[in-house]
Length: 251
DNA sequence: TAGGCCATCTGGTCCT
DNA sequence: AGGACCAGATGGCCTA
Image 1 (cartoon, rainbow, N blue to C red):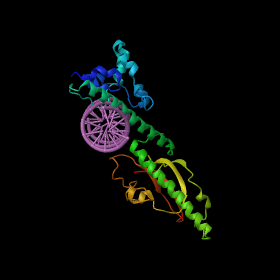
Image 2 (cartoon, protein in one colour):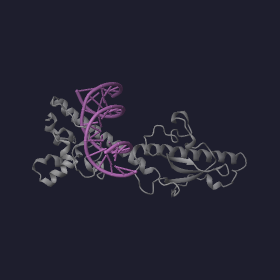
Image 3 (cartoon, chains in turn yellow, brown, red):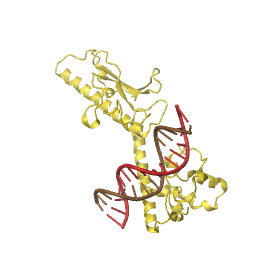
Image 4 (tube, rainbow, N blue to C red):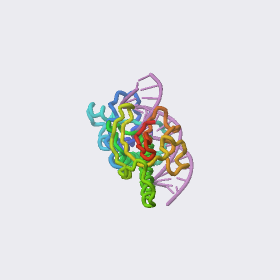
């Protein structure tokens, strides 16, 4: 079907405006291997960073290059009944560019967040939802560590007895280290020791908003997509009642 | 092959 | 009017 948008294909990343059928682009190579930034966009905020230049010259390219262009084409739904006025069409194209950049900015922020989270040894890239949940649990664990350290410091100042095990080194800020739990394949990440026992994320079932100290859905994860992994931290032992060891868990 | 994840398009709504 | 934000729809890629 002809599209009224087809005349501006070359000015936008909106590949769906062409009349290309799905069959024409089948057999394309991995899109995932191509990062979004190198695929169609450049830095956020520059819509023109799409593969505009090459698309502009689509008509005069060889078969090989045309094939490459086809590979890059067409993500997302394509629709248009061919009745959209040019003015509206141009507005839509600009809106698409903005939306694309907006999502790229969002993804950049997620990448930045991944960068500050404890790394996983196998370099498995966390999905978006996993990143958010893991960050939530991570923040909770750090907060717990600080809270417990403060508690012990105040106890010490008040002349109260030290922690049961008396290991003040546990008062240090989280000492992150990456481990691999051989007993539990798939559960590998970072852990740290903290002092004092407290409610762990793994034992919490309250909502995020309902508790100020414990991450909410990190345990049961009713909101988790079926099969999705949720990375968090679990209090694995409390031998002396004061020594909690947070280990990463996958829910 | 089904399901998960993702990028993109699209139209609606709200705000400036 | 135009931009930001959002959610639904669509289709590609990857993995179990």
